[in-house]
Image (cartoon, helix red, strand yellow):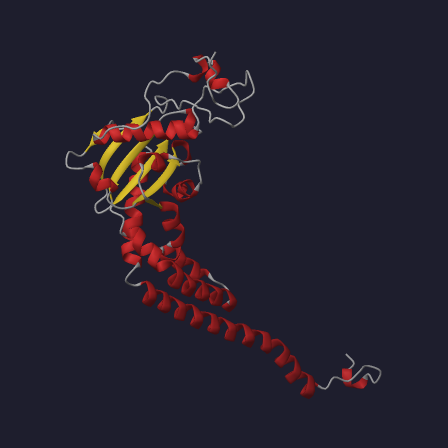
Length: 302
């Protein structure tokens, strides 16, 4: 065969020059990726140490309480176990300070993975207002305490860029500064009040109400109401426009009627007087008299 050196028309390759150039071109990306990986590992390890240092006192307490709350909710969406009241539990104990409150629906929770999403739903709700209890939303404690859960640590380990690590570090510092006090106060709540709607909507079926002792997860109250034993009788203020004659009035309870009725079930279960008008007359069967329909609210005299 003819040697390449004898073929004068072929370009000559200066390997002494191009060899090092090609080596640098191929080696540089590998070195850059290696150094970036080293930087990522170093930042990840630093963030994990910082997370452990900042949350070391709060995280175990939060996770214990959170697991206890989730276990109570999972137990509550099973078959109803009948009414219950701890004989030593009183209304005064329940109303002494704010409670932790959550509301969920029976068909939304099948296992623990469904629980947080259901608790975060913002349903129309008047139950605690009808009971007259101060409360802290459990969904807010769930959301603000997410950085204390093992899943957050897993997200740090799974971060694949230094930029993502930096974002997680900034988020951790903001959460510790902004949310730590709220989380701590939420964990101090002595009782969990849980409402479980059995229907697709709260007004379409019974609602269960549970009260749990958060110190040990023990149920103190368990009751169930249909939500249809309270009638709100409408009235009209003199001088304000009256409803159009013959305007239809729905017979289904609204949220306030349903939840105030359920609140009365809770009061009855605990042994305190109920509020509102029970078995009041159906407003549809009451015929307005001349005095109630007068535009100025006054009674005419002959």
